[in-house]
Image (tube, rainbow, N blue to C red; front, side, top):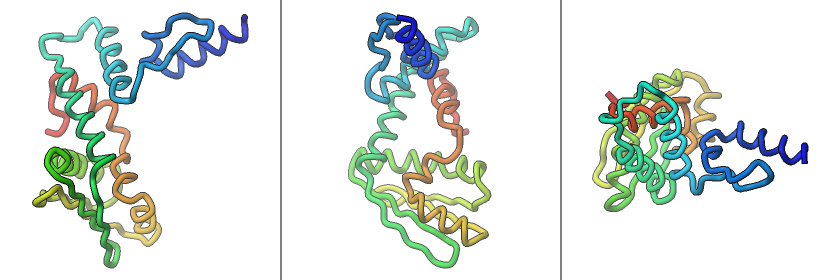
Amino acid sequence: MIRSTLCAIVALSAFPAAAQHAHNSSGGPVETGQSAFAAIAEIVQILSDDPDTDWSKVNIQALRDHLVDMELVTTEANVRTQSEGRIVEFNVTGEGDVADAIGRMVLAHSPMLEMASEWTVTAEPSTNGAAMRIEVDTDPEFARVLGLGFFGIMTIGAHHQAHHLQMAMGTDPHH
């Protein structure tokens, strides 16, 4: 009994968003569902725990829309990678909603990526998505950009969680 209670406490402390849905401390479920739902649940819990939350500004729909964009880009986008010298260009394309999501995600993430790295990062919209261009100063950084590829690059910068909270609080984190 002590071991299962200890395991439940460790699991709940590792996943605070899931804690709100735990049914019991003796092995009950702790996962809130798929990742978008879990991200929303985490933000709702943070907002609910903050007595200073201005609920008149909260916009969970904006967060949900962003999470949909993240899903579309991650699972549906096509990427063509080109490189020359120490410059890597990712041409990211898709159709319809996917192209729109690519445009929003790539253009918003590029300045954050530049701040989080020592790279020169530019992005521009294209007919069916966007192009991201990264220029680096060293061969190891060039190899890193190529190794990570577009999808790995999109994860760089510990801004995502704070960015999601800003969206849910009704502020635009991209400006």
